[in-house]
Length: 145
Image (cartoon, rainbow, N blue to C red; front, side, top):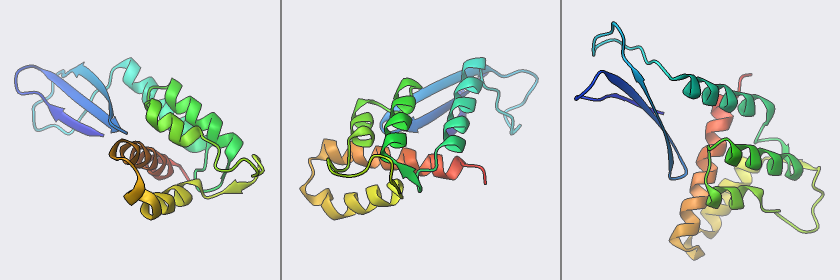
């Protein structure tokens, strides 16, 4: 999440960039100087933050089934955290013969696949694949022990 104070108003803005999609929040700065380390999020921003944390806590992307990954990708898309390209990358079945309930390290497998096959991928596909990996990594980093 990138946080900055605009130079032309009394607003604090935060931008959360995931997979080429930017979610932007702005809230009025009250009784704070530019040197304060406080950020005030709108109610919508707080709700998005809570939704994100809930997803991170409920889904372990390093030990997840394809069925759960499909549910997670849908929740990320419906929540505005990913775009359609990332939805397609995350929600696509990895194999037609695989058990949808078997667990695996989805983040690790995606990272391996990208490094292995990125040379043959179109630039747009690489962008969506990397964006999906970035979101999975952010979820893993947000997960509470």
